Image 1 (cartoon, rainbow, N blue to C red):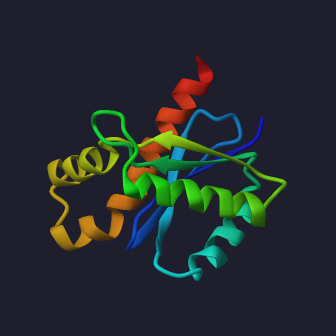
Image 2 (image 1 turned 60 degrees about the vertical axis):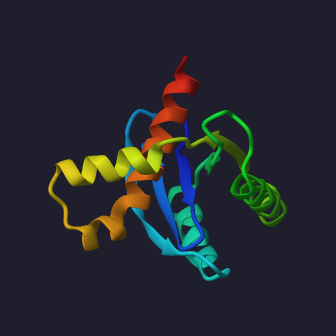
Length: 138
């Protein structure tokens, strides 16, 4: 098998996580600054280093299941990435509540607010990846 890369794309930060080659373990990679295309350098480096077969991008769906404006922005980003990296497979994954769960996990671990802001997107990317991996196994 091959690795899977997950992204939690926000307007300020982008969290990244990667699976092991057997697609059992999800590991947080880091957080990149969003807002321009600078993050693509880090993304390119991840593609070279981990060579994922699939890139899972968190899709912010509303609690009632409807797509938000942010979801439309993410879908447009996925189409852009497909054009830039035609040899890669991209898929959207419902990311409802991942940031909230990540925040709660960090609060329970007594991580300071300042440090939570630095890591919450990475943890959310791990949660997105874990959800997708679990789904793909079943």
